[in-house]
Amino acid sequence: MLHRLGLATIWVVAPAILPARGIISDTWLPEYAETLYDFVVAGANAGAVVANRLSENPEWYVLLIEAGPTHEGVFDTRVPGLLAKLQGSRYDWNYTTVPQTGFNNRSIKFPRGHILGGCSSIDGLFYTRGSSSDYDRWAEVTGDSGWSWKNILPYFLKNEKWTKPADGHDPVGEYDPTYHSTKGVTYVSSYNSPQVIDSKVIAASRELGGEFTYNTDINDGEELGIGWSHSTIGNGERSSAATSYLTPKVLSRQNLHVLTDHQVTHVLRTSSRGGMPSYRTIRFTPRKTPDDPYVEINVKKEIILSAGVVGTTQILLQSGIGNATELSELGIKPVVDLPSVGKNMSEQAIFFSTYNLGIPGTIEAATPEMQTEWLNEWNTTKTGPLTSIGVNLIGWLRIPDNSSVWEEYQDPASGKNTPHIEIGFDGGSFQTTPRSTIANAIIPLQPESRGSITLRSSDPFDHPNIDFGFFNSKLDLITIREGVRQIHRLYSAPAFAEYNLSLPESFPPLDDDNALEEYIRNNADHAAHPVGTAAMSPRDADWGVVDPDLLLKTVSGLRIVDASVMPFIPAGHTQAPVYAIAERAADIIKEAWEWYG
Image 1 (spheres, rainbow, N blue to C red):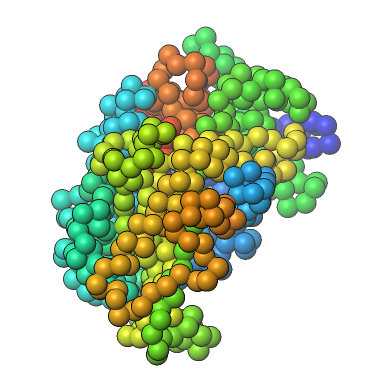
Image 2 (image 1 turned 60 degrees about the vertical axis):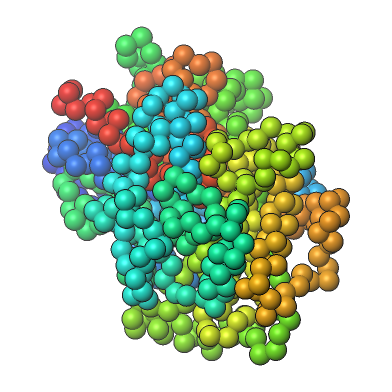
């Protein structure tokens, strides 16, 4: 049946229940059109997890739709050390923020994965869970104890497949096996290629103790101190949602279809069910040419949006779900007035400081010859520097309780075991000779600032306004400032004395608050961990977007499973928490529908 909507051609598919076969395609095939799906999942990061778990039930037909291309055959997605080549490529949505007031009106690039696996296929591969208090706060805020650390930990373990590092070293003492699993699906390992700086950071940690005390496992819920980084790398290769949840065995399921290169643009009201509006119609298109048709299909049970903080928010708003006044101003008919959609966005800023080594005989950045050598090593043995994320050790620090900062601001951390600051140490040299510089990444982990995502227009292919609201609260700026000083204290340890470290001449004096803060404003960036635009809240709350079971408020048939549902950002990177959310969501969905058959 063919319909016209404005200038767009829309195919409305009236499907029949026919046998399906497990396939992946960038084309809307007859096998797809002839299948009545129980679940349609939009977005293949968290969505890959959900599609995998739901299709474990052979009676349920599942369609997974990804806007980007397949990851298969994309060499750079396999090599951890080549991640920079993916960002800014066709595998990236290539977003740009609106000018950030807190960054002195600079706009910044914002990479997001536009490929099967989503951001897990192009991200920095860090595997960090956050503190136990982060999840206990989720449980308290939502009124659902299932989001507590005690109850979410099994889902971290269900996802994780701990494996030995690529270089073959024994990771004993670099993690606590009690808090890890070897039976999951996504590879996780300790550092894969040593750097010269590693031994000095560990030595300084032991010399200074206190806030720099060595932490055996940064993922046991008690992050504070300095410990070895963990990453989603196995056998020297990236382990993504695509490689771990969409394996050939999974794709052979007769009831799972994967459609790439098709963008979901709208979810539509189908009818009413149980007195609530039912949203079980989804619209998508390949959009390869302006004349490509839209396709609309109905879903038996649920539509699950897993398109990420930007994608999920944009789909909701384009569908008329959001702030009614703002939507009307763009000519979009409001159908569900949920003012919180697109609001409450929380993102971590990031700032890099660099120290120069004042000794002879150092090396500079990797030469083309070295890079060729590293790539040859990776191709031959899956070992070497290209198995590394560049940061082998991470510091998780708090601003001291007796700091004068707390005379003006309230502590934004979820608990006393939650760090305010993350520091990544990048020595840059995988040789026996140190590099001429040490780079340090400083992240305010629990930002007070809030931003938003709003539409530019009613065109679903027009990138939205992305405003992180950086430094709307000056506390986030102050937190970075204090992190800069904490690094300097660490480098004052005897272990670093022989390096004769110094900051560049252009770097402001560390005791000059105003100059240091202005320098940070002019040089900070984003950490690529936004959350919260479709936040969870209690079932009876008049704020938030989804209930604790991740169902969209006031309607039936529509659930959200991605980082947008987090009410607060965890103290770390968001890859591992997204996996845990998706694993729990799959169990929630199964429990809700299995008794229906």
